[in-house]
Amino acid sequence: MTPEPFGARLDDVVVRFGKQRRMTVDGTTFKDDATVALAGVDLTIRPGVITGVLGRNGAGKSTLLTLLAAFNRPTSGTVRLGPDGVSPDTWEDPWENPWVTSNVQLVRESGDLQDDEKLSETLRYYADLRPCWDADLAARLLDMFEVNPRKKPAALSRGKRSAVGATIGLAARAPLTIFDEVYLGMDAPTRYAFYDEILADYAEHPRTILLSSHLVEEVERLFEDVIVLDRGGVLLAETAEEMGRRGFSLTGPASAVERLAGDRRVLHRQQLGGTLQVTLEGAPDDGEATAARAAGVELGALPLQDLFVRLTDPARSERPAAGRPAVTETDR
Image 1 (cartoon, rainbow, N blue to C red):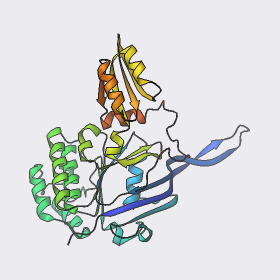
Image 2: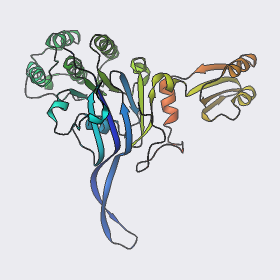
Image 3: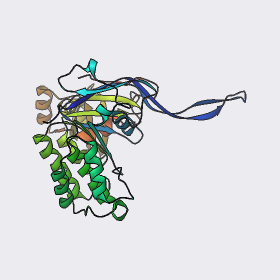
Image 4: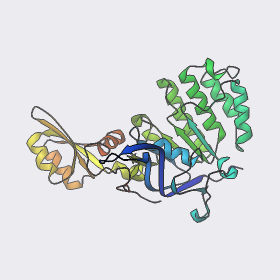
């Protein structure tokens, strides 16, 4: 029997790493926290959907994902995981909780493989840990990715190691499956084969899948929900459809574009000669679309990757900063 997909909830989660010695203006020294990776994060992850976890380098993505897998624990705040259909109030802390961790599979770029053992031994290790492990699926995927299970990880290229990690994540069929930039090293055909396998197996065996990637344009078709992290805070947490309504572009004669843009917030501006393109916040209404056509201005949808880049632009003053709560967060 396939277990219920797991959801997750984080309440006021703070994660700090390390200490460093600082000097005051009067010459005395004190120890201070070196890094704030997550700052007061409140977030609910819906069970049973594929969620994209996006953020620039250092935004806190990997820290968030390792908390869910109990690889780390928060400095303060609470992390709770549990199955769909059960009240989130009864979900459990994953830290040192065998029942929860046996139902969570985190795959990182390294694949977390046993370098001194053949891949077949690593797969047996995961089969013992994961109640829903599918050995036939693992064998098929390794064959598709052209990976010899008799080899040791040290003999594999970076791309093949990533393919093994992808295989483990899919074959585990964990109620909460997390892929943290597992695609690194894969060539384009292998990445696209991996994405297709995610969708196919998810359709047959529903579970909660979190997918962190910098290749947003490639993976956005998979997402039902999107989480955008920025400087240790949650900038957005909403459905992909809702995020798609957060911006659009106008391209055409500069004067007409400026007039049509009106008082809307401009996320990005680019001009070449007399042609201007602006990226605007929000969704256009029917009147704006009609006016754009009449003025010879092209109105375009904004790809998720472009919107992510614009919203996390370092120049945007409303970006959350470590130590401050996120700008926007939607509990589901």
